Length: 329
Image (cartoon, rainbow, N blue to C red; front, top):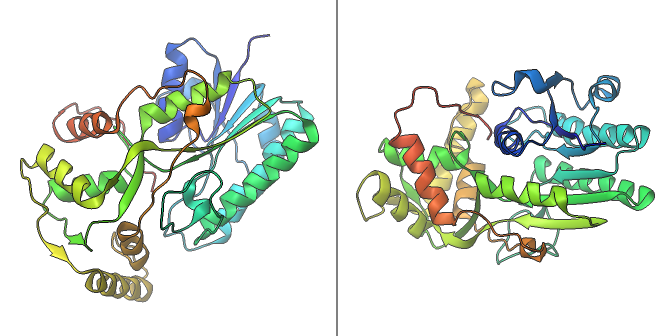
């Protein structure tokens, strides 16, 4: 029997790009999500990972890729992280046992490591600073118990921040702020970031689909890690034809402004694009390394710089009015 790939959370940014690639390769898939995929409506089944009965009725594939998650950093009801990321994992495991599913690929996150001060590999200390990271790691532990009990295949992928054409997450927000002259640099810019281009992430997930291993754990990072000064200069050179960084504020002042926005958000019950946690994340290092090259014959199809150029060209040069966008962070 030919494999059918069940992609839970497949209507989102990563899922849509993955499904496009699978379709091009003639691989069968189904999407399980809370919303109908705009690109693949016929392949979509509406179900919630928090609802075991509906999830069981919806899943008909024999391999599961779990992309479902609550990952925004401004969610007020913190229990939402737990019900989606942890209860959702429990329900996926229950269905997998019921239907004897032999392989699960789970996209976790480098958020399980929390703030890191040096390059961190898969053996790094687990120290999440928010509910997203905490609940992702709780889900990982549940899937590992399933893996140990059933001896079926489990691959856990911990991606860093993902960017690419159509994504409306934090990296796009940075691009857009620079493009619209609304960006102010905070801090000395020496902190380094790990990021990942969507086409490379998709290629890696597809490689994991074909791997015949009992267990795998991989950070996903497109190296080399880049410091913020170089990153900002690269963006400004491409979309503003400028070589400098522009206005810069010291970290303490940027953080103080972030706290002011936190207070204002609390008082007026309104969300802002600036917050103390976002200032901290922007100015912190997030350097990771990956064991992805341990997978035989895997080579990322694009360099990090190529991915940045392609994304900037798509977002700020290409005038196609039918661009599909995904609000993810």
